[in-house]
Length: 301
Length: 301
Image 1 (cartoon, each protein chain N blue to C red):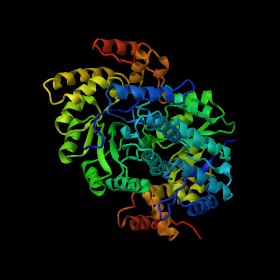
Image 2: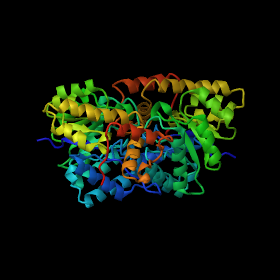
Image 3: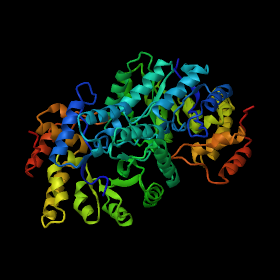
């Protein structure tokens, strides 16, 4: 049985008036996502502005959602930083409070590291965390991190740590890369980073998806996951792909927050942390009206 | 009078057998650099593997060197991280222990941020630190950070925070960019990121250099700074440029550590933290023999 599967949201992080993370809106959003069909949550991913949060902020927010009775085994927080030391701190904390897994970026400051260097980084990270329950998901997102995971690096890490390195999120946006990983590593829990590849992935043994848009469209995405072997599957996939395509024509994080702000009738939700900025005037309204033309809604009542 | 000027080393960080930062070797190296001609020190820069160090490691090392009687006003530690929150923590700590300035990367995880987003990041950072003595040096290193400072962003920040945003390190490697900044902002403390541009920079009003190679060649680099208005200047510059050219034909950080390890007869010094790896077999010996052919030495006795 896989450790994680299905529809996983990299949870948006709401900010309060003073710019600090807002635990109440955060918990409410986490609960809504699980109620609406997400099978698990990946806080502090790229979409979460996770890399704009401080170490203490991440650990405190994680404790807050666990205290709010969200089952920690459903959580796969992002714990990767450029620093081995900080990544160990965040990862150990996540395992200690019971998280089912962690999603770990490669060290992304220094560019073009060798495969051996990345192998050592992950080996030392896993040994430094030193927890039997550690389950690592490699976070491959070369368009942003610039540094990524080659097939041969994945192979080495799986071979050295078969019970720890159990999956990967592929946000390369390159289906041929996802397909190559699925072909080469049966049983590895591979999540495309966009629901646009959900059905294609499932048909090749993929585990589901971890996708930004799950923050606003969890129900229909879950429907694809639940019905992927039925005759309806392609039509359902077309529906979620249309929403994805509309949303990603705008700056993704800011756009998603504007959608939540609109449907929750809560302008505070649109706040982003620098270096992000709000959408240009009129763009939020345009995005919402394009989504409504697709019969999109968020059932937040 | 400028806040900083002259020859500044982004101090290499030695690691002990267990992979943790080694304060004794670190302090010894800091003292040697100041004795040999560095006018100031920039710990936790790119060359320092600063981005591979944890927040706690950086703060503890900084306290160790201040406790070892290195004057904090000579320190310009790197305090930039991808996160506004963590950058505020490190920056506030540096100011509180008396550091003369801080060298701050832009938030470098999310790519292609808007100028407005970066402006807000630095504004909120400066307001969040909230210390009268804060002196910020912008760290422009687009080959690695990918995110950098445009002339118009520098102009906005200087205008909004004239007593705080007082200088910049330009590691673009692009002399025309350094020249444009020097032309546009007289009085701004501009440090090229390589001593290859030291003399050219000084002739246009530059403040000195903050350069990796200052870790091994501080004396001759200082001599260029002290004699830049004399007839000897071009010849002295040729000498330090030849050393730089030789060193930078190898992976820079690993190469520099190998040089220190050789001249200190201390193999531990060659250790790097993942994702870096040691030089390939034979490369250290080749580098040393090329340097000796230039009459290079490190006077560590």
